[in-house]
Length: 324
Image 1 (cartoon, rainbow, N blue to C red):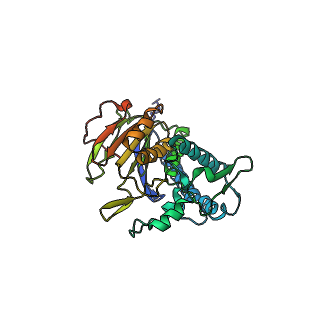
Image 2 (cartoon, rainbow, N blue to C red):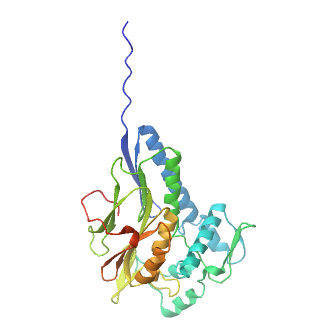
């Protein structure tokens, strides 16, 4: 009697999908032995990105963030456990940086319109700066509420939400058994494992030469975030006005063009990229050197590259695939 022949299992494959969420390109690329399981994993990541956008977008009237900004000036507003955790982490980064990171910068940030080249005058800026101050954002953990202790105060998680989303996405993929993947949300990425025998290669964009790279980083199992003065900006009167704001001045720092941070989690990466940008090369890199497992690549105002000690000699640029 002839035996039954069993078909060999289909080989695994790389799967990739891109969607526009949170005002940026969300890209998921992964390897999975079963295509259906891989596609389901990507869908789960995109669903989580949409959920975070619905919760934390300052542009959606029904988001939790918008509800806080509407009501917390008048009294305590209930917040979700997730939002409370992010506010606690934000306060920790504010304390670490001496206020260089401050989600209450939004009182000033809302005065800039980069698309229409609008910036505040000195009097308007001074009034808004009076509403900035992370110590006046009062979280009652027991009651599960938050309130603003200064009139005109607002918060914005723009320096935080994408890193949080990438962290959640990585957790989803790991729970589904994905061992090789990359999740990218604009300038924030997380690589899981390697590219099946070779590292992922992440390109650090040249801030002044579109399409060119300032550095290439071979990476495995790490988060990376880049903040640059070329993302949302306009030039006027010989000055670049960009979306990275120093909470102390309400203005854009001038000493750096871009900061790239590598760390274990996206939340840390994104927060530190903003902190180093505001502190400047010397103070920012000194802070990075005090943080275990954190490295940085900084392009200063003159276009010079600075690497933290953990990166040693930078790898040369190559033609390998990149994420910017």
